[in-house]
Amino acid sequence: MSHRSRRLILIGIPLLWLLVFFFAPFLIVLKISLSDTAIAQPPYVPTLDLAAGWTGIRDFVSELDFESYSYLIDDALYVKAFLSSLRIAIVSTFIALLVAFPLAYGMARAPEKWRPILVTLVILPFWTSFLIRVYAWIGILRSEGLLNQFLLGLGVISEPLQIMNTPTAVYIGIVYSYLPFMVLPIYSTLEKMDESLLEAAIDLGCTRISAFWLVTLPLALPGIIAGCFLVFIPAMGEFVIPDLLGGSNTLMMGKTLWTEFFSNRDWPVASAVAIVLLAALVVPILIFQRQAERQQEALK
Image (cartoon, rainbow, N blue to C red; front, side, top):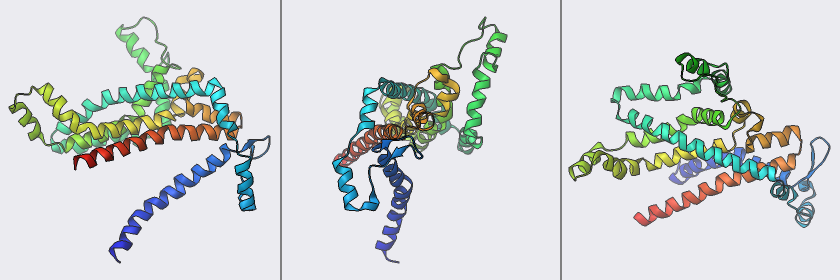
């Protein structure tokens, strides 16, 4: 097999994967978002008829409208849901970073024989169903839960705290669920860091704190950025955690999307919500990657 054939196979397999499991479903959702709502099964009327050939495409383009997308702007509910999701995702990502960085730093500085055990402990929660782990937090955070009983037993509080069905419970659930996605990329970069760089910085007059800010943190930045993306992206579209821990008062795009699909049965609007959410996540990532590539090219 020639070098060119091996290269085509190496590139073609992931491209085929993206085509089948990302691009094709994306086109289906996009088509539904441009359809008309109907009381039928399925609950929409397609405006694009591929069976009609070029005539169907011409009719689709001539009658194209973005009614579902304009509805998202006109209804304040969707704007509030997007802003609420954005706020919760940003705060959760920041809290996860504050918790994950010391943990990853300690793992990277631990004796080498202990590192595989520590990594296993970080990913150990994934051995249990995600849904079960979220349900477990209900038993911990509710008024009669383990946390309130523990605090009441210590005399820290005089009456149970109301944590369930609040944004605090959502933050706890998201940070707990996605913390490994923040820890592992940061640990991967810190574990490869040459400690002689810190020794050189200290020999040149830096304190340990300044050496951390000038050496450790910049070298860990790729892992930090990767971890933030891995936490922020699923947090923006999260449905299970706000539904179980946040209650009906927590407004997020994931819950809104589920409601439109299964309760209101408005598939075009639900698909439009999904497209907008996807664009809000993918476009900044592509822009960031492009800027990173330009910086690397400038350094060469």
